[in-house]
Image (cartoon, rainbow, N blue to C red):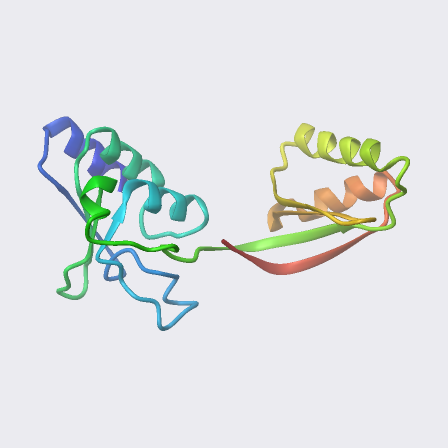
Length: 184
């Protein structure tokens, strides 16, 4: 995807066509949502956001390069003859399409941690120590959520055991949910 966009930009192409396993950019992952529909048009920004949130149809860098050079992208199927999806500037999309939600993306292989029984007087310091230690360990977290006496966050499954060890090292009580999926 990225190479195709970069070549299109370098060659001054009128458009770039990217062929993939699905009919185009879809409203959801068709393997998860069988009724997902192919979107006829999306903006560069929409497809970048969807890709950053877990959609796998187009690499976000491919859309960013096309956007920088104002090259329309066509995402089409390698297996069926279908119109596909036009990825273009908002000015080209907006008059034809008005929508509040473009699609749903999922990120799988996540583990949801909840720090329980946080004491109000030491909560801020405890959270700082945990989040600082995660950062020092190079562990990214998603979707931080705060409750009255809890603090929750999500990490990639590959980091779960390191997070558990870190929380145990701090002597913190926690719950964890493995095999969770984040939908955005």
